[in-house]
Length: 489
Image 1 (tube, rainbow, N blue to C red):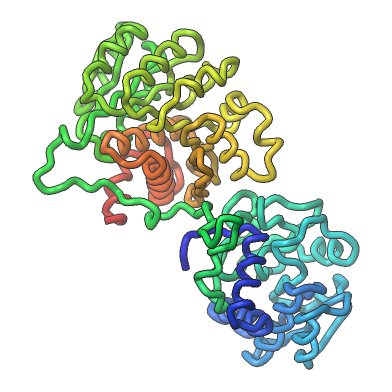
Image 2 (cartoon, rainbow, N blue to C red):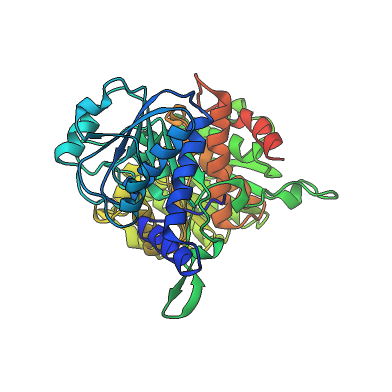
């Protein structure tokens, strides 16, 4: 399977493509049911199962699951409340076992429930009998077909007051945004992608300009980028020099965290640009990372006149306001790659266009949700999904935008986007975002393409946190990178 992510509409097009290219729709449904059953059998011993079937194709998949689980030795009954339509009616007729009305009574004695009520295309809240039985599920283990009923396949958001929380979700051909965006990622439980016979060419869709690849949304994995491993014969100067701008003496830790991340990720040299009052405190804490004193925007410009300083992080701990805006201007005019984070973004909350007009193609913006709202007011609320919001923001800014969170989304101005889904909850700790900014800048210093550097940095960041486990603090993240990179290698 690949890392491409399909919206619900694109998945419907993929189904239609498969049928148009000789794969009968009933075969797709049979294969979908088999994929669900294979996942169940691999995890669960035969037991009493209730399969909940809706009136559409998701319910048709459910009838296939019931028949095949029965053949595997499970005790199966189907609960449904409407006459199936189309292919689902055919699969319903093939089920010769027990049937019940779709009421909470259908759950009595069940050790496992299969949710075949509604798939990813549902756009309205669950109501009536569907809502009642979902409410009655309580703590029963549920295997969801496609997506848990009541969850939007495109946003991962519950569509109303009631939705299924699954232990396992089996989807088909490709994941959907709702499988990786929160809260859908949690509500899906483990996600298995089953091959049901849809040709790979189904990701190509017709447009007014002819046959072209439409997809631009992926789950972030190492398959999407190439880490800039050191080369034989190389030396530290060929691996770039990253500069991290420090705040005043009482706010220097964030810059040091970013600098440590940049050094650990492979930048050949890393320096902290330190205001005069912070030189001593930074020098006390740093060894392999150098100190470069500077005073104000003019001083930063003088430092960056040395073109060997080819990547800059500005924002962590610098403070928000006019002086920071001037520092950002100096960094952007230098021609170096620039990561703008934290206070560097907030400083432009009243002059967003002033920032956007200065950005260039080697820039990455790394806001969290609050900073995103300050820089792109209303965009999150106006967009149909988090992915759409970040795409709109990147287009408006003319630069790569990384919206930090447990489901980080990264987008380019052209609309290419990824969802990073490997971040554990322990990353919600002070300073972790500073380390991420340093990772991205360290990769940019090594001449990694901008979008790839943002994607790689986000993935390394999540993997480092997962490897460390409970008790994580930001200082631990750079120190986990040797294990992360060894695993990547």
